[in-house]
Length: 252
Ligand SMILES: [Mn+2]
Image 1 (cartoon, protein in one colour):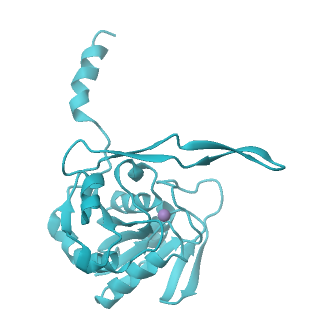
Image 2 (cartoon, protein in one colour; image 1 turned 180 degrees about the vertical axis):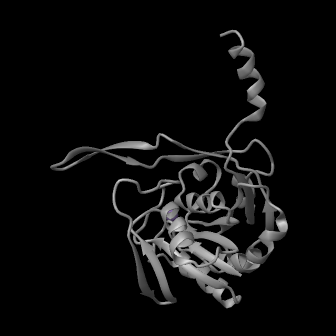
Image 3 (cartoon, helix red, strand yellow; image 1 turned 60 degrees about the horizontal axis):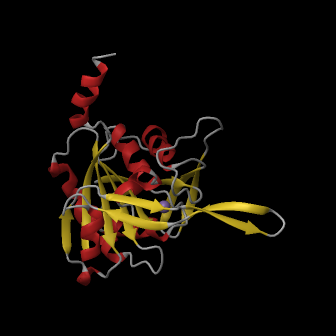
């Protein structure tokens, strides 16, 4: 398969190389186009008010392309200017850190996958559920295993996969679960600090609050050691709310 690989952790990220190696070893043809620096939490942002540049760079795994933009800039750059033929699949990751529940709205990793599917390319975001001491092997292996299978899933239009992998060695992974997007909020996540000289500043952080409305939520199954695979649709419409909205609007 021809696979476009992007990420939001940038060209220096070990997770990029973990996916790249696993896919290359499985015999796939890989084109890498990623941000030239870490761009986590840029969501689906695109660059509009400054020039976008692309560079070919030499890495420990071969030639890659970087842009000074976001993951959602890298994807069309690759599709329109770097790949003579459309890829069979786009993989965004492997991200260092989970993208569970509401994280999908902030995630640059998910933004890259979403941009690919908006361009008609089947795609998947993949994240490792840890911020330190990453064990990449299981996530890399899963990339190679799932890549040739995504076409068989008959995903509806504008639908892609959001995958989260527990930070375990492959032997300790309990299996794979198809999940729904749970809820992950950050309580009190703008904390005030006082610094010498510059004074007051704020830093994002806070306590993670997970909530699951069903047993198949991503935030739950990951705790049991399963790989979580959530089909995500770019259409955010809440259809069962339309009737109530319409009923009120009728009186206006
Ligand atoms: Mn990231």
